[in-house]
Image 1 (tube, rainbow, N blue to C red):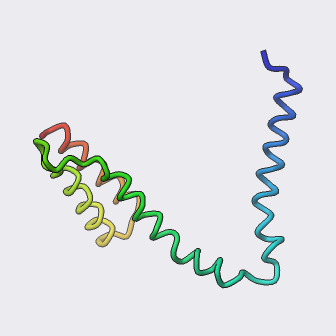
Image 2 (image 1 turned 60 degrees about the horizontal axis):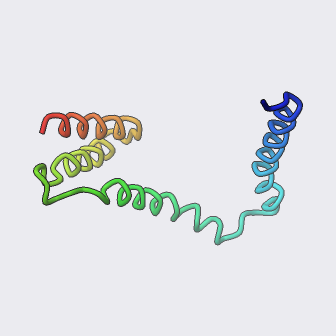
Image 3 (image 1 turned 135 degrees about the vertical axis):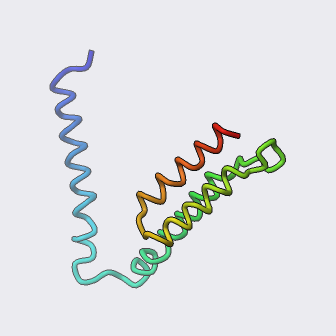
Length: 106
């Protein structure tokens, strides 16, 4: 059994490290954010989203019995909902519900 003192010390160290990591950028970039960091802040969100799409669709079997139709329909619905309403939560929920209904129905 883990000792209570050890558990409290462990929680304290984790909290301290978390706070230090959150305050560190403000200390390092007090005079201004360097241009490479600003560039990464603009480019990385789109790159990460593209990687997530590729990761989610990597095992899509287009030669299977559904031919990837549920995946394609869900992706198209997510794009359409996001272009229409600009609401990320609506896009994610709509695409997930569409995918699940198509997978269960086909």
